[in-house]
Image (cartoon, rainbow, N blue to C red; front, top):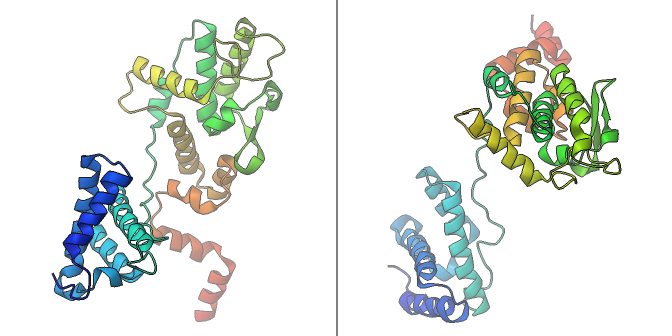
Length: 309
């Protein structure tokens, strides 16, 4: 290795290893993992085209290393772990006055690619919702499932609903979203039917003083965890091949709405997304299609084309 003016690397690593074991009381396995990540970074530094001293490393060197890991196809989670190992080491070097700054501070691996959320097909949803509820709990679950898919509500929004938030005459529910923003959502025909059926049996589970729309066997507002567990129950019950969780029903709602309407803004409003870029993960449209739509619809784009003719 070419680290002429660095202190003896091995002695430095020995001292660091001692710090992890004796001061931090990490297990031998954890210490070994940290040192292994660190060694990989040191090895990368020592190759001729990066030949840089360990104590002279700057942020751009670490970025270069991250880039190499990324291009090597390493998962972001693994990169985060390796980066964390190097960050800890430089934190210790800083504390011991070997360096004047930690070159890893504020650095994060490349952002995770936003994959298109997994959705259920309309047919799968139809099959899932063909429930024949036989008791109050099942009537409640049926209403919960229908509302998730009918209105695209978030789990936190659904469990926070009170009876007064529901207006079935108007076919509307008022939810409190992120940042305490209220929004009114339409409730579909099937969901209204399921909600009415639930409201008819709800008194069997709680008294009139309980404001929550959805309650548990404990006669109080249902918890988010309980909703998740009930969805898992119905996934098994209905023999669904993929995991069923509230967000999957929300994603399915958004995708199906977008496919049939093509109205990104409307779907943004329904989902309560502050930024339309969040909604755009639902679009399967390619850039060429977007460009064509832009050319046809944007006034300045049209004017430019007319000027060219």
